[in-house]
Image (tube, rainbow, N blue to C red; front, side, top):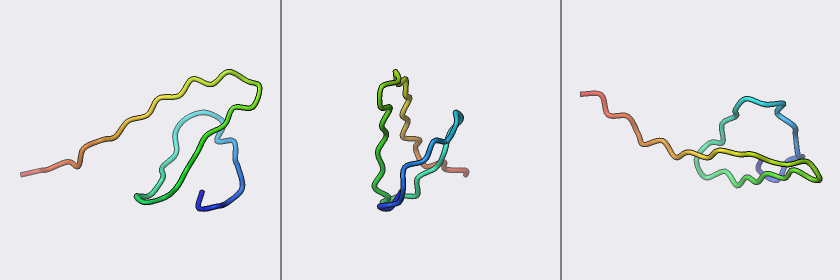
Length: 44
């Protein structure tokens, strides 16, 4: 992230802070990815 090296998270999830440029690549392996934009929680 932020122009850093590629990494393999090994499953699970990871967090990108707001404003961070990010990308994914799968090379020759199939890729199944889910993406979600969670709304900000409002606790009243």
